Each structure stands twice: as C-alpha cells, then as structure tokens.
Amino acid sequence: METMLQGLVIIGGLTFSLAASLLIEELIFGRIVRLAFARRPEIFKQGQKN
Image 1 (tube, rainbow, N blue to C red):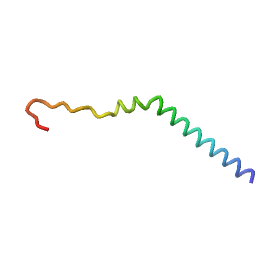
Image 2 (tube, one colour):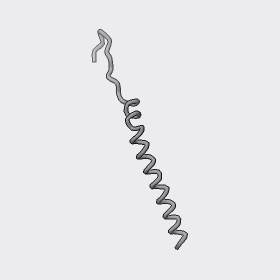
Image 3 (cartoon, one colour):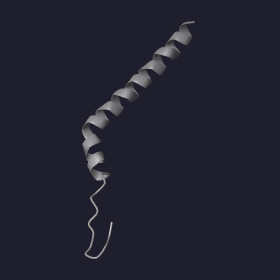
Image 4 (cartoon, rainbow, N blue to C red):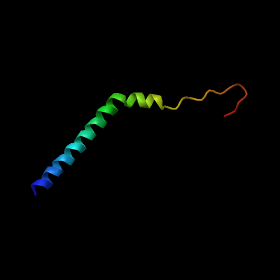
C-alpha cells in the first residue's frame, strides 16, 4: 500500500511539473509562436483577381 502511494505521489509530481513548465513556456513564448505562424495578408499584383 505504501509503494502504491509513493507511485501516485511521483506520478502526480511529474504531471504537475509538466503542466507548470508548459504554462510557463506558453506565457513566455506564446506570443512569439503566434507571431511566427500568423497568416500574413496576401499582396496581389496588378492584374490579378481575388
């Protein structure tokens, strides 16, 4: 029973650590990623139609 509780604590700690690191990464790099992959407005040459 004690081993099962230790396993549960380890899995919970790893899950919390992963969630916290993903949150921090999104807060720091989220805007950079959004700017990098944002759609740019298409520029049409003269004579082209939509």
